[in-house]
Length: 271
Image (cartoon, rainbow, N blue to C red):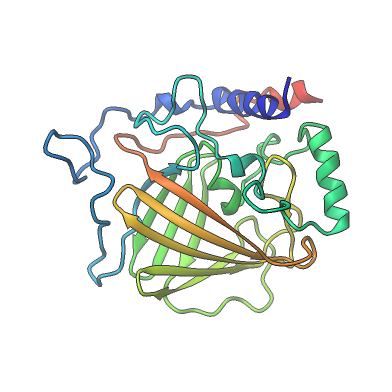
């Protein structure tokens, strides 16, 4: 059995022991979406905008970095998990630039099929990892705040748009602390204050407490969000690195409880 298949099987089990994707508010139509002449959703239509003219990222999103394009969120038996969800550096020449200690740790975690993964243990996923997992993310935007709600374990992240400085001595957290400014139609988000050893993929790559993350978030069309991520974490990596991630709009659905610990059995089976 390949490692990728094992990871997919574990993820499928985790989804199934909690509320499954298909049990959500399907068929309740998303209001106000642009449509073609034949009535189909038009993802290429212009992105919506806030009253002050900036792009509005509000909506329910799921990773677009897969071959799955079905509006029902799944394609046959395929789970819409991005390749970066397995290996964040898959698109980088030579992969992520690990420090020697992290290269050895990732090798060990990969060899043991990520059995110590915090996701498997039902702990929160930091936002960088959440972008590549098959769980819905709901963005709620106001002029001064962008809130990201993670359906998995009812997690949340706040991005402040009111110009506040980042804290000088933050208490380490799962999502860090995020403050953003606009550069034209691009939201530039700076984040610090992470917990140590936050997994960002199934291979066991991490963010550490030394990490500084910058996201450049764009909504080039109604149906997609593009996120360019730059990670500067000298404790874990020999140099800064960048990846490009995408989210696609999920229609006719809504967040419902997806609590991993409710009837969770996968971790016990993996021991």
